[in-house]
Image 1 (spheres, rainbow, N blue to C red):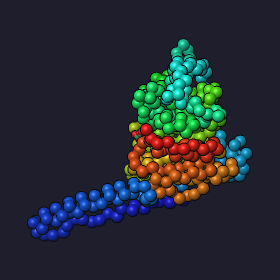
Image 2: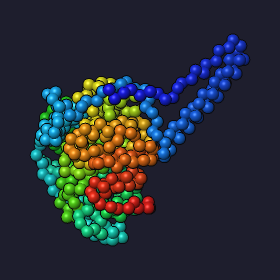
Image 3: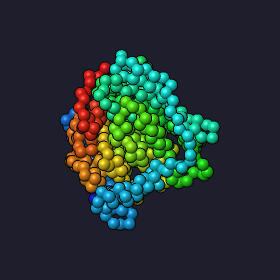
Image 4: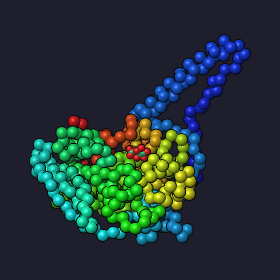
Length: 437
Ligand code: GTR
């Protein structure tokens, strides 16, 4: 049993009890005043809890839960060696996620070609080479272009490690002209640290709306009636990330064995699933990915996104089977710590924001903690602790990273610096955080 949380905020009874009307009015006013004072106190507590150096607030009340053991095979036996994990159990866990959560990619054949549509060897004042590339997917006379913006550092002794951002925001966030510089994709800082920076829009692969899977890559590759485990839109975006990786691995300036996939929120859910499906990604970065991403589904408390809510608001993200676990998370044959385990022994980085309770920061942390037995089996310590860091702190473990940044749901340079620091360790290199422009 992982344990039920207790509500740290004790409710106070404020109702007055008096027979005189005047007294009641007075007391009611007092009650209102007291209530607003209490509300202010509560806000102050929450605000101070969001300050750097403070512990993340205790869990609200929630039902006790028990996590499935990643090392217990479908036949009930316990996986005891790295070989058993690789040859048997990893495939089982992957299949369980395909069947119950994200869905299965169809086996439909297609053609893929890469087209450099613009190249500037002297981008960013000569510090980088910019390539704008289309990864074109063609089937039955129809073509779907995935547009990639790629900056590679010009100053480098050897092929550079790369970060591929799955951008779930507008194109201005990944502006190749750099007229708009968004902290969501801090190219200048990444290049200064020696990283190649690539990005594509998830909407190029599949639209982020419930279109009955008619448009985007679904419209192109799906054949026949949809099944309960047919791929949803997150699986489609993850597939798109792999197609961009196909291209990145052909770029001489990039080390093909050092490509990280990174995403925020729905993009973070996608980054984790992309790395689970595609073992060529050396590092998966989940920023504020929450429900259906890094956060454990079984932690069911009010104020965080749960399965019922996510499948209702975003019916296209997951396979149809996932809906069956609305308010029945305990019946899922897997939980999200096993998604992290699928990335082992490769590196994983999970970042949270202290005010992002909807994404359940502690649930995101615990997923990494509970993936540790698989990392251990494969010769790595993982985070190396079960204690959540204070707000503002980071844990750079052995192939696993976690940080909790003060503030709101977002991907900003502070998060990126944590990820680059960790990637430096994983890839055995050093680089310095840059002053933000
Ligand atoms: C929210 C959704 C989250 C998260 C977020 C985002 O509306 O509830 O699961 O993915 O969107 O992607 O920004």
